[in-house]
Image 1 (cartoon, rainbow, N blue to C red):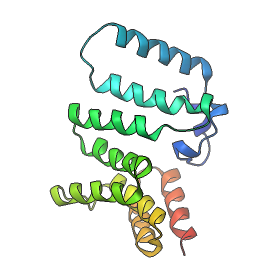
Image 2: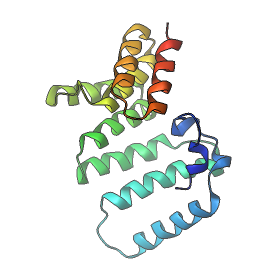
Image 3: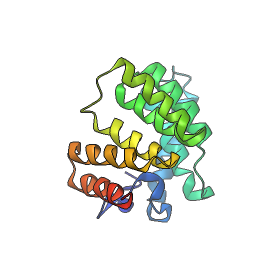
Image 4: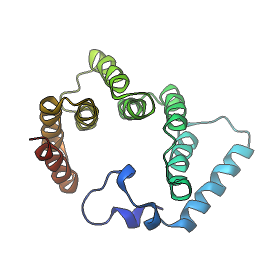
Length: 168
């Protein structure tokens, strides 16, 4: 919710959002909740890990940078606790930033060997972005188009088609 003001209008990926538009009071409230959860000594679960990941992103409002290494550690823990396909694809995205695009693509290759991902939009969007970062423009464009065609949100669809068009 703290980032809601930055999400009006066209779709803007999280890392491209202007943190000065985020609600600082909601960020502080979330941080206080996260500290209380940590102090409770309860076993760490999915929601605490997801909140910690959001905290890393929110810290960009203060530092100006995203700590991809911290996100990689948290997302690795998340897929142990909650090994959803979405969490695993998100982990590939994070590995692609923390280590290298090729490392993120390797994570996606392992997932693709285990699952039918042809109709899973986040897979195609992630593969497209990582491929673009390696310079494989033609293949990236194909995955951006596939992701756009699978998008349920018209703002995301338009954004992904724009990504594909910029690679022409």
